[in-house]
Image (cartoon, rainbow, N blue to C red; front, side, top):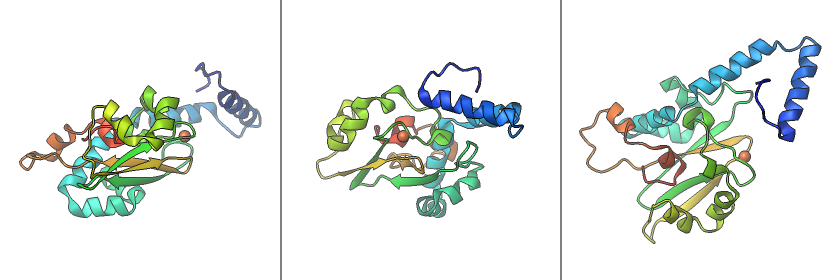
Length: 196
Ligand code: FE
C-alpha cells in the first residue's frame, strides 16, 4: 500500500490519512497491508465464473442471487467485503429479451472481488461515455451483435452499488458439470460485452 507509486490526488490523501492514523497509534500499517493483500489475492474473475455456473445449475440459488446477491455469495464462500467498505451487489440476468451491460460513468467502480482488476477499456472515457448513449454500437465493437428486438439495459455503478451480469447459459451444455460450465464463462460475459 505505502510502497506503490500512485501519484493521483486521492492516493496522496490516502497516504496522508494513513500517516496521520499511524502517528496517533490508531492504525497498524502491517494490519492494513495484510487486509488489502488478502483481498487482492482473492479478487479473481474465477469467482464470478463460479457464481454464474452455480446460478445455471441451481434455480433456487439463482433466485436468491438475483434477489439479494450479498446474502447469496457466502453460499460459495464469497463476499463483497474484504475491502474497506462493503458494497451492494446487484446481479442482472440476461434473457432472450433483455441484455445487460455494466459501466461506471463517473470513474471505474467495478465488482473487483468477483471479477478481479478491471480491464483498461472499462476505465476509458470512450467506453464510459458511449455505452450509455449507444450501447448497441459499443457491443458491436466487442463483436457482440444482438437482435434488434433485444432490449439493452445499461447499469451504472457507483460507490455503494456494483453490478454483475448473469449471462445466458449457452445452448448444448445440458451435460456439462458445474466446473465445466464455469470454464465457459468469460470476464466480458459478466460485464455484458460478450454473450457468455
Ligand atoms: Fe466509479
